[in-house]
Image: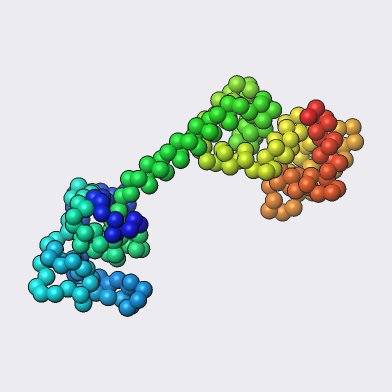
Length: 251
């Protein structure tokens, strides 16, 4: 939430997906609706919106309080900078999402613009990196998305689907390729695609599919087969197997 003492026009909207024609906010403390705020110094204090008062705290208000209704109409409410009393009241209102409420939220246009710019930059970066992937990397990434289709489509179709993944989920795509073990996963999936490694016993065992046909490892319960291979190849024992796989792939 922005500092309510900053002088600027503030915008509020109804929280959630529903957009009723109007929402009336509680303006004073009652038996049916508690309006209390704990400022961290004096414990919970009763608050009330009064247009002729400078403070929302009842124990600081003087004289007769004029309490007009606060209505969010057509989903939004604009409070000008000069109406500091209302802005302060809304900033500590218990129905404000930032205070754990559920009725309304302040719109931070600057923060929204920043978030949108960050997303657009990630979207651009994801598409750039997707286009720069080698055929080897595209095939491995495609296998992680659609393993059963890897031998049924062309490399151009794979590139299209990987690019669509980058467009539709840029953050997920970037995370997947920026993983420190991403290159290792590419090697493993390529070894599976090229038939260097094979699964047996309902993917519970991984075997070499070279001249020796020996078992490389047993997949632990609850672990994904590719993750099990990755963990094995990162051990001292598995490093020689990784070198052999890379040699067979021509890496």
